[in-house]
Amino acid sequence: MDKLVIEGGKPLSGSIVIQGAKNAALPILAASLLAEGTTTIDHVPKLLDIEVMLNILRELGCRAEHNGNTVVIDTDTAHTSRVPESLMGQMRSSIFLMGPLLARFGEAQVYQPGGCAIGERKIDLHLQGLEALGAEIEEAGNRIICRAGKLFGADIHLAFPSVGATENIMMAAVLAEGRTTISNAAREPEIQDLQRFLNAMGAKIIGAGTDTITIEGVQSLTPCRYKVIPDRIVAGTIMVAAAATRGQVTLQNTNPAHLTSLIHVLRRAGVQIAVDGDIIKVGSAARAKSVERIVTAPYPAFPTDLQSQVMVLLTLADGVSIMKETIFESRLKHVDELSRMGADIRVDMNAAIIRGVPRLYGATVEATDLRAGAALVIAGLAAQGKTVVEQIHHIDRGYDRIDSMLTRLGARITRQSPVPNNLTN
Ligand code: EPZ
Image: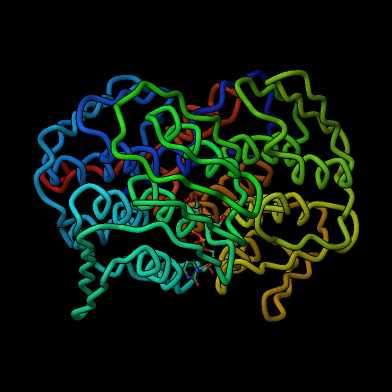
């Protein structure tokens, strides 16, 4: 498995263009199934998760090409509603296919996507929403079969503002007969992007970005061309890396309005942030200040996907900070790895008490999930000495060549691939 080798201690500097949002592109690619014909999506980054989604669409009979950052999908030849178990297991987001498959074919066969390093990741809210629209759900072992002769609009209340459940229900409801309302809906920017994409195909949806989304069912949708929003989590990751290495970095192609909570936290930590249109400038020449209390919560609160990255900055801040993870039940696995680099962090239930230390020391550490892996890269950039980050396939799921990104900002980072056995003897 590839590794990243990082020589720490060098401030990042320069400018970088931020990639398209993985968590917007994935549901939008699934939603392309809702229209017969050729849909083109721009600003889609080259990521493992995107490749898995395209492979699933190909397995369903679509033709899909990813050239540069543009994906072209022809769904005319889609002929099955059964997602292969092997592909389901590679990526949880394949659960997004239930809604579009049900809407297009009246049936969807998927598999329990399973938990992962950050938590159980149930899908009960997805299934309850689809049942409310008239689907019959049959669970046989880990296989889930949804059937619906026709879908009918319904009033759905989510017990928790689940991002994926909100998206799945939206995609199933657009072709249902009648009106659907989703209350206590997730409000993330990626939900708003999905609404814009579906409406560009002829859907009638309002309210994304608020806690109530209303969908008027239509007879059919037509393919379109669409550009995905910038990735706020990749942008946030680079911003934290700039701050943690006391560098000066300019980010282009961002949407600062999607990063309000992070900008607020970084400014409280003493980081200079300047915003101008889609450009964010980050600078930090001094040691960060501790931030008394950061709690992850659904958008627009502080995002769980930036929790591990900001924790790295706080391990080097003056004073004691507290971070509380409320979205996923086990998303603090990076604490052990950071402690091996000299961080002083104590975990109490779902809270981390972080006491700043003068410096971190390079070590060999292991990425346990996508964002924890990104956090370990930031720690390696800020640490004294050499850090080796292993299991970096997790990072490649969400960052388009993170080593190239950071090299452009002056980082001393290289990707090491294992030498094939037949070449070692
Ligand atoms: C999306 O996951 C993102 N993934 C995650 O980003 C992100 O962390 C998460 O939203 C929260 O913002 C994509 O968009 C592809 P949820 P999702 O449904 O939809 C519980 C990354 O690093 N829940 O909002 O799976 C669930 O267990 C990834 O890019 C149920 O109980 O998140 C979790 O504790 C990681 N039942 C909480 O809700 C359900 O039916 C949030 O889950 C669904 C969810």
